[in-house]
Image (cartoon, rainbow, N blue to C red; front, side, top):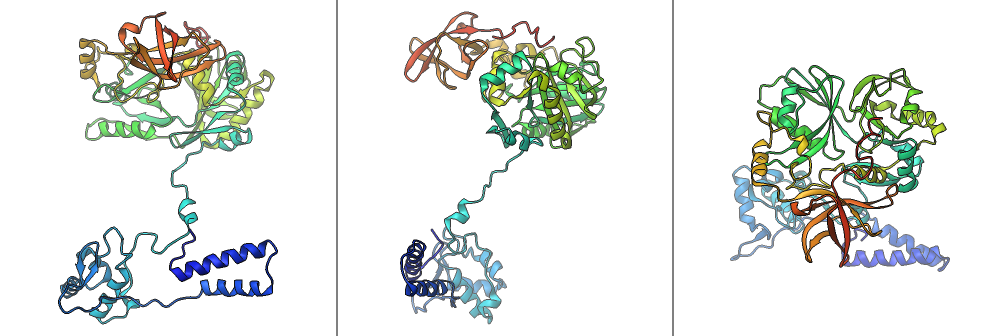
Amino acid sequence: VRGVQGLEAIQRDGRLAGLKAALSLGAGDGSDQTLAKALGAEATRPVLIRPLVTIPHPKSKRFVCLCEDVTEKDLADAIREGFDHIETLKRYTTLTMGPCQGKMCHRASIGICAALTGRDPSQTGTTTARPPLKPVPLGVLAGPHHEPVKLTPIHHLHASLGATWMDMGLWKRPLVYTSVEEECRVVHQGVGLIDVSTLGKLDVKGRDAAQFLDWIHANRFSDLKAGRVRYRVMLDDAGIILDDGTVARLGEDHFFLTTGSGSLELVEQWLEWWLAGSGRCLHVTDVTGALAAINLAGPKSREVLARLTDLDLSPEALPYLAAVQGTVAGIPVLILRIGFVGELGYEMHFAAEYGDYLWKTLREAGREFDILPFGVEAQRVLRLEKLHIIPGHDTDALSNPLEADMAWVVKMDKPDFIGRATLARVKARGLRQRLVGFEMLTPLVPGEGDAVVADGLPVGRVTSAKWSPVLGRAIGMAWVPPDLAVDGGQLQVKCDGQVYRGRVVTKPFYDPEGKRLRS
């Protein structure tokens, strides 16, 4: 545990630990203190260690490295051939490369190399051994956190608000601040704000940008007008959903893409892969680290934002799915009018160094309307009320957009796009499963992954399920056979060995016509 080896050293270390514990409790006398000092000095006394070599034997082979079957003769032959440096000797003979990593043969190999080359061990040196070269305390190995962590520019403000944290990819995000019920209520009735800096952000520029985005995505962007936003779905060659997000057209050859919080690297590499060697004239730039982002959402969000900008925020000037660049609280901001949480909303992207400032300014401007921040858990409840999917959560490695109730996204009239051939075959053969919404007829909230059953046999699975405070019931999404994907049809979910009844819902639970989004 403390990195001490050798029987005598371990016994001495244990005795020293016992003495220190007794002395710290006031037990013992002066002689015990003297003994403790002596044992401590003995433990730190340098010890001269001589390299061990093999013992001569007239008949048998003299093995140096038992793991790799390297003998003393092998070392001598290698040195005669010119591999007389300890590092080259190691690589030529595979000395110390076995499971023990030189723990049994390192010192012997140094001594033999020194003797055969006429040098002393200090001149011979050592190979680069993998740690631990010698025993170390377990705390040394257990202490470091090797997983990288990403923090948004507004992270410390969330911490000051007492946020409960969650991991999303490499990001730390606020799961909840006060309660999910209160945060959902604020967004539905007043105004809330959420830090969405974790979204991946890609800047795409070039004369072939529109054509390239048409090829990469199932839907079409070449006809998207400047100043407008469109939902995007990216597929692989097999027609499987990889990621979704938004595309805003900022100019004739200029587009701004957002990706899921954990899928930026995947999307960027996917774009670069298909761009390489294609001869297309465009550049893809990752601007995620350069930009912070805040989503201001709720029926009062327009009134709050109007206090900080001269932009015309009326529904006629800035309608749903519009994009505009302007100034908010004195800083340049790209505003996307989108509504992932089902209410009037403004997603603002701006220079990361202003994250702290704009968050505080928005909260101050919304104080009259009792503005509150909301976390990821409330966001997931709100998106579920609108039946908005999360790729990787509601989909898996076999999910295509036709079966995920996203056929409206797929533009089969395009000449080609990645995954088109597979989707054509899926369409021809018919759908084998469907992603639908459901509501429980009891207060139970099913677990994600619980089975949808028919006649006692599993036929599907729950992908998302939450309690909706505004609806007063448990809602969710599930994969089911096509014959069960009928609006109002009965659904059975098996939870903890019991079967509970639910009802299939194929339209959004909340504001199914989308009037609040477009207000």
